[in-house]
Length: 413
Image (cartoon, rainbow, N blue to C red; front, side):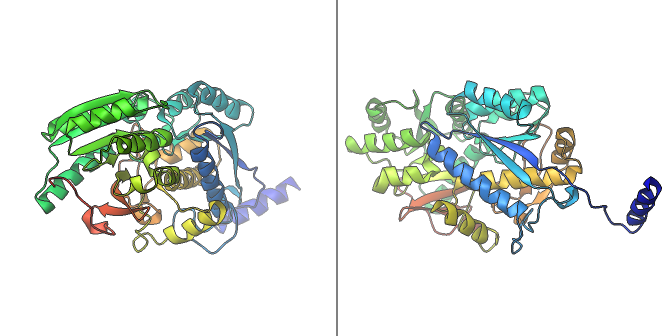
């Protein structure tokens, strides 16, 4: 009998076919704030990942992108991606403990996360120790991939890349209008995200000969930002560059309004400013706010997968994709592709497949050149865009060749 099985297998291999075999579900752990002040973002992420798992696992009309044909992981006998969610509560130490639990008890072969860079820092220490890939979907601190880690991968641009796009936009818009940004004020929370963002922007301001009138660090989730709003007003800056999560983003806009201050320009480091909660909470005060972004939802001509994926997401969550949820979807698709190409579903083989990743931009929903990781695990082909709130929605205004509309530019007025 054993000889017959071996002969049958050999015959299938000779014909170029793969023998059918049963493969267990591939468990991927996802760590996000599902309760507490970060819960709205974490719950949106949960929906984004569930939609992505459906795209990968189920039978549906093919979507023109990576892993868009559905039906499971074909190189693993049709295995399915199984997501196990864990609640970080936006606490780095809770995130650390949950990462360890997912690996040791839930047997996750990879971890994805995690919104805040502070939680990513602790999660990735655990995944490094256990030799399990960590896919950083939406963490933007530049220092995260500069720690010599071998199991860290990030599909999204980081804040240095994002900030470079901001200053390039300032220069391009200045050439276009004759009105240049010459003085800025930085406003950032006291976390790894805020500090790294400020440090990068200070460096780029110097390189671009732009004066930094204020560099304001504040405690995250402060009950009041009135004093900080007064400093911003007194700075006389052409542009304010905030690095804040949702509640603080709403609070600073309201605090500036309460003292009768309307900045000429607000250029946000995304985060809370790109969340639907900000657009709702700030209301008309959000109008005209600029933000860097990974995503251009209005680039449907060059990225035809946007429309069907957004339709699926909106059907479940009653809102459109944004900067964070689009990055989360893209990161899980890239991770699932690597799992599929690994041929085994084992962590060490998934890591090898991630290193070999080379995805053209037009196979994603992102306006990127593509996805290819360098030796630090950073995608070097993630090309940011600049968006502006108009009519309560973000629209792409830069680069000019992909812009959906022109920027409202109050500098120099």
